[in-house]
Length: 226
Image 1 (tube, rainbow, N blue to C red):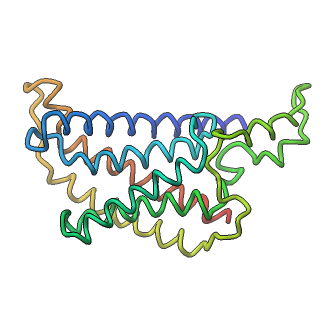
Image 2 (tube, one colour; image 1 turned 120 degrees about the vertical axis):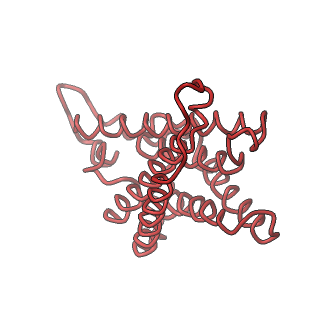
């Protein structure tokens, strides 16, 4: 259990670091504009929401928000990009953000939480445990406090595993596509300074690959448990 808890913490911190990177690019894109090399702000905002959501899925103790707020955020990302595409104010390539938002919304609303082998055992399994003289019954109440978990789909019976598998396949293909782009992406010379290096297409591409792998991994973990 200690090892799996450490894995949750490591993944949670990793997703938060990705979220911080996207937040920085989003702020700078709004300040300096896409022409300055920071990329499209809406795309960064979308990845920010997805990475923050993945962080609290693997480590619920990091979650400051109740599940309905996350549902609204993911629904907002999905709907906003869908409307932009339908109104032809965004390229069809932004359909990826619709899929990403819908996948997070599906995981929160329909799918059960992460399996015990992925992290901490479910609260109902921990309630009767007595470890090192500690009464673990109180852990059940802690993990069901508002804002402590986004596993809103647990027990809803809405999960259809094939949907998760299809979405995971999409993110696998998306990761391969991003990897191919990363190979030919231009590098930024070190001599140009840290600000220019942060705008590197390769750094952005690597972060997007990690985000895509994280999404696919969560979908596979939940699909195997549902």
